[in-house]
Length: 220
Length: 220
Image (cartoon, rainbow over all chains, first blue to last red; front, side, top):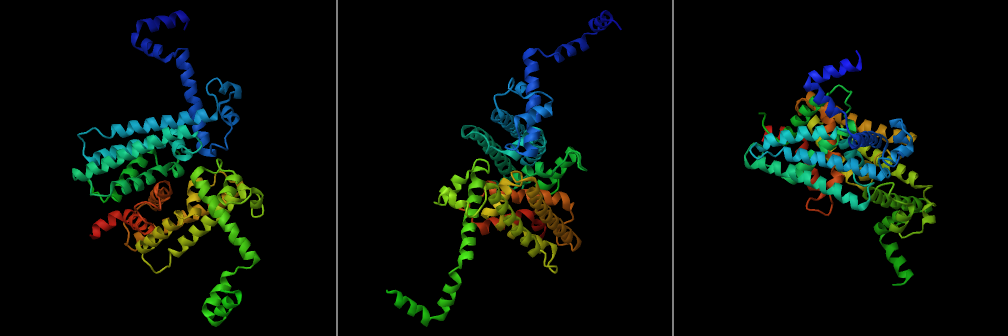
């Protein structure tokens, strides 16, 4: 197949051409994609070995690039961690908002919340947020992350209260119940392995079962 | 009151005298007591500010002693953390053993385990074990702490299996259930404050209620 043939094929079929166009990122998109790869790799290394135990050289080695190349994307290790934690917080906050569509029962909202929350915390960014937390960040940045956590906790409490009000969930103390439930979910990154016997969908099913059982919810 | 009078009072009342004798620690006991104070203070500071964010000067300042005095008790910060984590692990392991008296039902064992485990993890050493973990330790020491954690997890799984066998607890997958339950309990140090509305006994009651939720609903 010559170049000319290939171009002809593309020209005659507009659908693949458009798809191809989208896939060829421009310079700034390519830059952003590479930054994302750095962030995701760093998140995995931080979660596994700890933030203070990780050097920029460790991250560069895992990416098969030289350490100076990293500075093209990030100022320092702190900036990498802050971006990871901010991405995790914004993803989890989106989840929290999606779980409250207004018309669903509290129980249904809780189920949606648990499934999406588990998805997020077994993702590299969410795992890093849970396992590394805000402590290594600069004080002013810690506040950003902690505000996000407070927001998510508030959403869970609202869902529990909604469920108690519409009788789709048994009454409970939403404050205490939310903390016990977040505990069960936030501990998942410490023990769950994607390559183990339980796949992510199975994990989400078990998490929903556990949460509803702990709230004394009758089986649907 | 002169020294002589004081001695007389003590001599005539043998009960306080014996108590007093026990309280006057000898040199090695005093040394050990002071080490314990250092450990407890360090545990609080590590849990609150993070291990890497804490210096020996921070610990010495909190104790109102000079930094060189600390070296009388410990070689370095790593040694302090290792001793804290080892004490926490041994306390929690004791708890695990106490919870299995052999003749109690699985449900009763689980209740005992939860109450004693919560006691331990809201104590300075247990809180530090949960919040700082084994990651900052030297690799050979990490293994000691992780072995202890595995032992405690095994105990919980055995209790859940005992409860399923004697029908005092509903059947479950002990492996998954244990991890969700440990999550709920291990998250407590992240949100619980002793000076808040819930006192430690109240907290333990709520933890037991939460863990046994579905079962209690059936009985009620």
